[in-house]
Length: 144
Image (cartoon, rainbow, N blue to C red):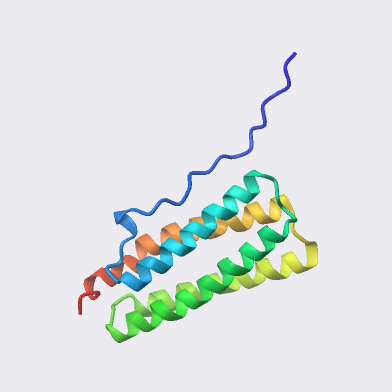
């Protein structure tokens, strides 16, 4: 009898496409950087590097990039009087709470496969939905 193949979930990478374009070059570039970092995290998780310094450094980078991006994007929407500005700020605040809760769990529990995969899945799903539902509303005023 052959051993069963490892059936861990295989995720599709975050690939940049037109559906994510906001029309603001700086915001779009920051989104691409975050996508690349999330894909790098997925690569490290696939290599089972759950407790590596590389994973912890990458998580810190993702959090820092996200916080800086949110501030930049909120300023951009405010400056351009984008109709999504308030929804965007509310969504960002909620996601920052999610990140803070994850960071607390990471401090208490230490890095583990379930925790890191939960973070990756939660962050990836949130990013996809948020960009496509809220951030793309910047298109209406990106040229203004």
